[in-house]
Amino acid sequence: MRTRDINKEQLVKQKAIETIVKYGLEGFTINKLAKACGISVGTPYVYYKDKDDLIVKIVMEEGARMEEAMLLDFDPEASLEDGLRIQWRNRYKYMIENPLLGQFFDQINSSTYQDQFLKMFNGEEGNLMSLFKKDISAFIHNVVKRGEMDEMPFEVYWSVAYSPLYSLLRFHHRGKSIGGKPFQITDEILWAAFDRVVKALKN
Image: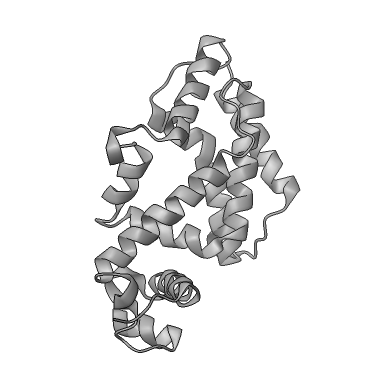
């Protein structure tokens, strides 16, 4: 039986993310992964049962890492503006430092693997609500209770609160905005968009 090599296992995960971003989930194969890693086709099976096992484990592991990063310094008792500012800061930092993961999760969100990600987000694993969802839900409840924001469906809140940020980040990672105009995000652009989001959400 072949022994596990932690460095090689990390290489397999990283190259799997890169290969999925490059070819899409439909074009992702263990053969392409092995070639990208410079290893034999049998090596990934030392660490994962099959392609699905590999993808699901990456989703779970990287999803947990993303949740942890987004909760850094976040206080559910914070004001609407302060709490949202921390969320924007954390999400922006994570996506800038991990550009491939943003594109990877875009692929996951439009695939059948999304169910695995949602199970983690909703705390269905082990019947425990995820800390991330708990804290975000508590934050929304608190700002509505204090009268800082009207009550609204979560989907409406998320669309107003975060869609502008993710649109700017997609433009940034592509290097161009609508119509092909060159684009690079700056702090000035980021926080100008944030100010408009806060105004849209506040009573």
